[in-house]
Length: 113
Length: 476
Image (tube, rainbow over all chains, first blue to last red; front, side):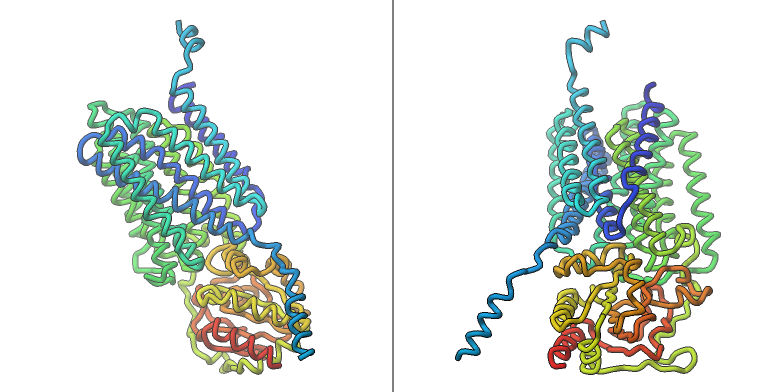
């Protein structure tokens, strides 16, 4: 099994994995998941670098440069923006259990004076 | 001899493939992590690490660094890309997040299309005529990548409100689309038969046109689903460029995104109660009924109230539901709304947030905004959880939402949003709308709930109005 058939095999198996791996997603994660998978296809940068490496002549060099630039935007921006979104979900358990004491002591001072 | 060769040495290309395999595993685990709340952030970081390893490995492969000039250009382009992307992603307002995702997705599609074109150019410049399947793969990459690029650009313009968010329809739309499609097919087939690169540029140009005409008739409210679909397209375009370059990493990563993106698109359209073909081809809202006046259809007019009235209403309620929408996001009012909720809670009022799945501009967008304001997770109720509580709710406070509480989605089969699940604000005892104006919502249709006898309106900027409400509740 070589060449195109081999690649088609990989393609089909990857399609099944992609479909199965996110079987259940709560709707609050739809946006981050979209953004995260957007970052993952930023790996097109690897392809762009291959193109850049083998480029000869002005046309190919210019196209290669633009391609690497666009792919970098995709991969870097994609991961950073997703991380920023998910950062928001982190600070949950800060239910500030202690505001009672300063407020209460304040009142006592007020009452005594 | 072959046996001896494999036994003795383990060539660099095998090492590279092995590292690429590690990256592939990283991507699968990243997707897995991103679909559960607890593992989402580590999942994303794992994906980034996998990408970093794969890119680093590419530099070691000898394909990039055989020429100082090409290596310099590659590093320069990456430095430039990083210098643009990091500040853009860091500084963008949370409300503008969907547009940002659209841009990053579009440039990925553009990169995939350019890879296919450049590879064809390169193969030709070496004097070899490529095999038929190579041309097919390359042209598919160009087609899908360009549609994604142009479609994302239009989505960005719609979300940024640089152009009308309403569906754009014009005479002979279907024939024109068909013509563009037929033109692409003709160029594609000719390109494959003749093997000439010129046709690849033809496919590139017409695919950009297709991306535009395909996106224009899709209404603003459906744009998030569109972005998700274009995200899946870009994945497939990346997979196609993986075929062209013979790179399994690109094939797998692209296909993973293509498949999971397609599923995600279906989940999203389901959350909006709409089918995907309906979203893509129905020119949603071609029957626009919005008038934006304060007069209802049967001559009823809206009732306005003062913040003081509403403050008293809220302060003496037992249960208050806050229904946030995009208006809350644009007014950056998520912190003030929390202040109001805290004030009410301290008076013993039971407060919860009823979150429609597509509140904001994207599924999950509102949760992100409220999480930013440190709203406790357990006060956020998903629509299905919130709706049973609505009949026993005293006041439904609708902050900058409109379409997601429009009873037309349930009661009038002719409405463009008929069938979309809504938050049943209409079942609460009192409904208070905080709105900037009578302008209709994103879907561009009137909302009969605004004219209901139980409804009062508080016009003005959501943030200012909420601040007045906080004061009024304190005074009550």
